[in-house]
Length: 114
Length: 114
Image 1: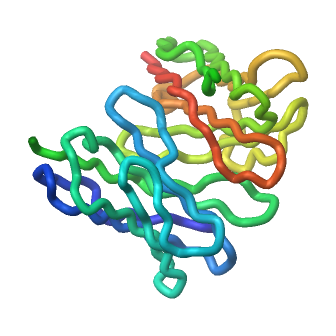
Image 2: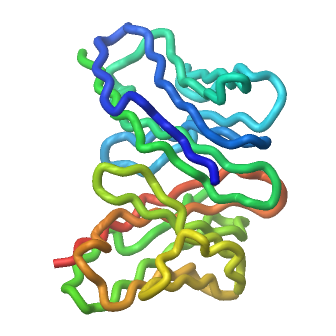
Image 3: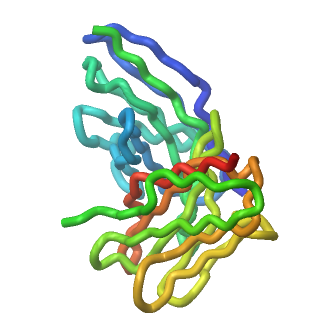
């Protein structure tokens, strides 16, 4: 069974700082990769996804992520964070093929100080 | 275009009572997933349904939990004889037919067992 690790539980940054959130997964086969964001009091929203092709994926709100297959990683980046990026971020994996369930990491709480 | 709807948003039950959580998928979506988020943890997959069929229930507790997605009406997650450990946020997601692996999440139902 696959698993997902997000090593940073809580990250605190000042506005305009650069962001990188780590995500590693364990699974030997082909996977689909996702980052979801949950703003305070709101539901999960899809930030970006990777299925195949260019390993550098651009999402909404200036976020991007890079899939490095050799490292089993899919780290989330943003060059300059804003106060409104304060939220919880979840990395998720699904196995390509018929299985559709998402396996989530435990989440990273990002706090951006104004 | 309405998103995934869940109700109620908050549900309080005493130990031993039944909890019924409802999920209406996005228009045109025929796949429904239920996830549970325990305090301080990420989302855990419970069950994957299509209309009138349970496709994957590998994440469902063996007792007291059941799910259905009838031909008409919302998907229901039912928890019988609730215990304190069932207190959690329950999220529903939906996806369209075909090969899309993207899942769109509802706002969740927060169940509190007293």
